[in-house]
Image (cartoon, rainbow, N blue to C red; front, side, top):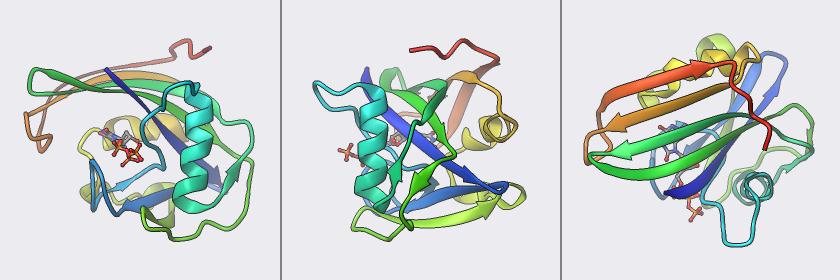
Length: 155
Ligand SMILES: Nc1nc2c([nH]c(=O)n2[C@H]2C[C@H](O)[C@@H](COP(=O)(O)OP(=O)(O)OP(=O)(O)O)O2)c(=O)[nH]1
């Protein structure tokens, strides 16, 4: 399965999301992230993607979750999820992403992947989690899900 990352920047009860301008999930609000490249660890990939997508340098992201996404019968992505409270630089728009802060209570779930509303509250409350999400073949509709919290996230 393709390894990938998501990295959520959190500050003052707000989360930084990007409007994704290209790639899988184009047009949706997601966390900064992307595929893990050959020779990279997931944490290195998470830091690189935040820098590339919104020009922010993240210090010490901590891993908080893991997701398996299946589209139809095809395992699609294995995603390592990180959170970061310390980072430097103002988020900037790039060719890949348009960044925006949201209060935890005002996250635009209607413009996000369907699974996000199931697990983001656990991210906000500081829990760890692991999920398996099966979408239809096009990735439009969530058909099945399993979600566990309080998992061991040591890498
Ligand atoms: N929040 C959220 N993110 C998801 C879901 N499914 C899914 O693949 N993602 C994320 C994981 C990855 O960060 C990204 C998919 O990677 P991608 O192939 O689009 O990455 P990218 O456009 O940055 O491409 P690249 O630069 O790595 O080549 O989407 C989901 O259901 N919810």
